[in-house]
Length: 338
Image 1 (tube, helix red, strand yellow):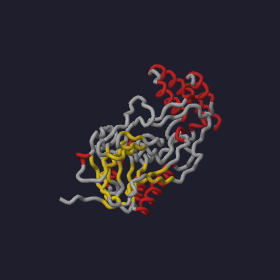
Image 2 (cartoon, rainbow, N blue to C red):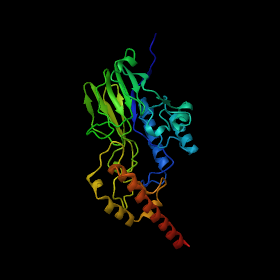
Image 3 (tube, rainbow, N blue to C red):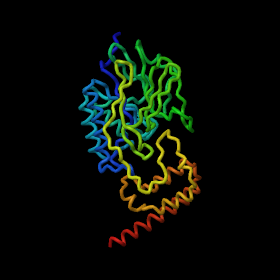
Image 4 (cartoon, rainbow, N blue to C red):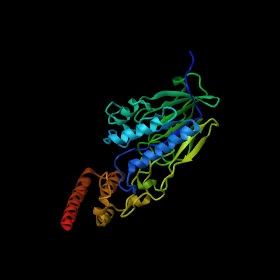
């Protein structure tokens, strides 16, 4: 039986786009979804020019069910422009349930025929890159990656595996998994963690986390959005995605948002009471008016709750105070407008 594979010049790894019709609170761009689509299109153009296959690492969407139909249409239109069918792993934001279902937007995009989606851990596809046969496997979020990748493939020269997990690239943290040697696997490329991480080698397996192509939160302020291609040379080639350096409005920002897998900064250990008072004294009503996805103030406080493991009782008290404060501010603004 003859093995079938796609002949490509490389695999372009594209970090989580988190495409959404809702703008993250501190982004300054007027049309967030257009910004993300432009970055996806830039990656697709690289693939068209270099004959790479686009490989999304998961979290194509920020919400499992995206309500903006025009946004889906625009994404389909961009993916259809690719010289070959792009592929994608499944991230935690892509699905409502444990596995991808027909109600999830990513499944709809896949059904349109413009995207191959890996929904189950195991071998995904085989490519010929240069003179090498490369097997590509994947583990969607919430599933286990293998200790031995060889049984999933026939005769291949090397194996690459996609993951979407909390991986302890530098320092272990609660819920993270340590990089491990996967027999037969040369390279593991991880999504989910928003910032680029130093490459880790365990045995013969190299683990790499390129980070997202979009900066959602202020902890990614210094992150350089880029995509990386595994080429026939056997190395990773970097392509920086054009981006605006200063994209966040930091007005009144006192508590850093933390992306998956990022350690809190020393500033996040400030006394909670004083931080809360300072936040309330900030120009919160003006800031909240800039946010499409909810109160920036609420975002900051909830981030703090998570990092500090604040008890439910204390959370209820603080959020109750915040709710009343916001209500009073809105009433005051309404009276001023009248």
